[in-house]
Image 1 (tube, rainbow, N blue to C red):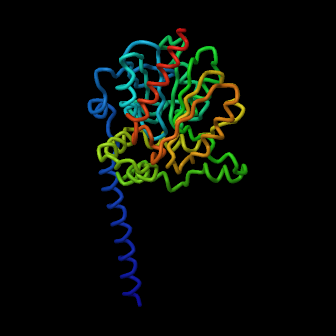
Image 2 (image 1 turned 60 degrees about the vertical axis):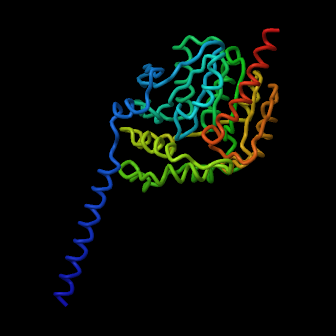
Image 3 (image 1 turned 45 degrees about the vertical axis):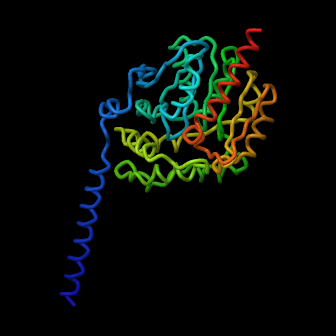
Length: 323
């Protein structure tokens, strides 16, 4: 019996030791990537960095003409807007930036990743660039930020472009259900140390439609940028702090013309929400376009196709304003 107990003790110790070694090896494999390494990999000649309220914001400013500001989705980066920039930059000044906890911007030293802070930093960024009047567009989280900005600054927003903003999710939940949904399990902290490529791959594939395969290089890019130093802890903090606010009341304050775009295969924010949001935008002229087979990651999945519709709408709006 003593030998058995001793054998079990050594076995348990061995398993704990093996588990510890496995964790350390995995943490080493998925260690943070220094910011300068990722900047060398993903910044280009159009990349700029601007300090806003202590946050070193990465942005790109391309083309010339009426300014169009684009705000990306949660977990994404400004790189997803490449097809839109290609479609617009010959006639429009296209500006895009990485939100804190995303892309090459990285963490916010304040530790505040609430929607209020994100909108505030967007306001300060727009002010810093001296944009008095602009078109503002966004997808998913970026669309929610764009709606809030347009509601707060109707005198500055000429046009609003919303690509499945998704802020209606969870609107019918009780406060208790909503709190549970926002709760990030304590076990998620392990992602700060071990974040396999399979996680961004799963997130992209689960939010993709049926129009084309998920590009492997997109999965690699998402994984790389999630591994930027400090990014994982910052993103978990954003998930814990985020609240979309009273969207119905806010949407009613929008006065600018709106282009509302939605993928019909969007399972994160069902296409029926597009019609609900159109009703909420009761005081704005709204044009709605939906895309068969396109999922929630519409910018990445069908960016060039959607950009053509955006360009045509912008051209009509600018021409009407000129007349």
